[in-house]
Length: 181
Image (spheres, rainbow, N blue to C red):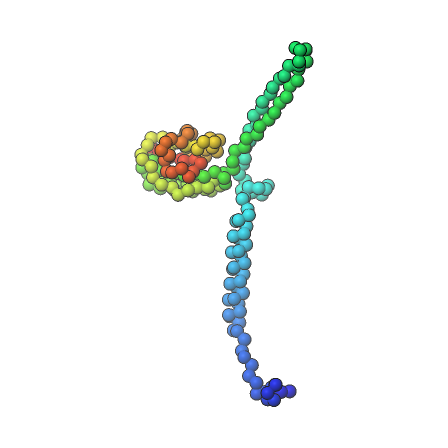
């Protein structure tokens, strides 16, 4: 046989393919990109608390009940009664933002407490310092009292109270833990 120029096949040189090491590296890079893409997509769609396999976080709920009685027209002996329920839920830890401030004077306690709360599923902000104080308090933002009581249960010897003005550590947290001595 010959090529289109009329030369025999034996004179044609074959171009060598890529070395095996190059092909293996390219394959490994493609697998790594696929894994990273998968992780990013899972993080984007998974809130961690939507099913029975979640992070084990608990959600508690309370039910408030309201009843009313209406007398029948004309003061007759019959009346109607209705009961309605309003359900309010406590947010799971993954939806509660916590900032820990160190007012104890001991180095590293805010970071340790932040790491403890993070391990329990809370969204934590960077720990920082606060003026020295006696006693530990967990401040709650309006509407987050129940959530901050949950945080307080994880912080030894702490009390719970509404956030003061000015807000210590900034206004970006639902609960602000100020560690004291």
